[in-house]
Image (cartoon, rainbow, N blue to C red):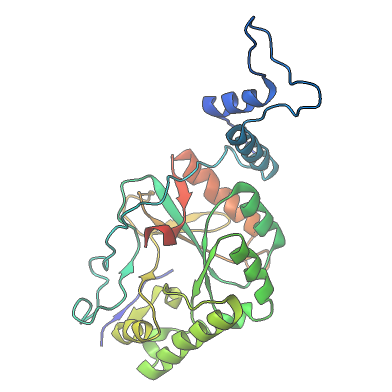
Length: 293
């Protein structure tokens, strides 16, 4: 059976719209004579909710050392794109057996990318605060042997609206296992996800991006519908690319890991700063992967 192997403070800018939004916070509505209107005694000054939200993002971006305010993603599509296996990433029986597709990019023309974070080793509270302050969506793919010491950390991110998905029990090289062993790794993690986080996910990422037909058949049996891997990977000090042009594309899935100074020359916050600075500079917003599936 064929195995498919995939290896894994600068100057701050705020656009004109951002400056106008912030200015709206300090400028009142003009009165009939052109003077600034003042609220009646006992009334609170009128505030614009959108301007307040933008001002909070400006402050958060400065606080976390970003070069610019991250762009806001568009509304989720009302009609979801059709997800199929990437060419060359299929296995025998892919279509006939309705196996979960392995893909690296979501078909869309919108300038969005999807942030996915694997494993669960590093549990940095500053990362949670940063992503909450900046309102950046992401998807976590969890392996039980790394998260079982602190399920509560991941419940916190789940409570913020981030999705927790399956990355097996022990993060093995799946094509080296039998079908039953692979099924145990995937279905076993499904059971833990349901017990600890309230639901068994329908999205699964094979460790290292390695899989074969048995992997996808076992995943389907365990209730998995999609098996996304990635098109780019970001580290605390560099990026790696799958495509020859070494660039971002609409709908690309970006991988990083829950890592800290014990593995990298930096923190999760440093990693996210590199990620967000690049995607924002290139005109991309970070969208929620599950909104497109």
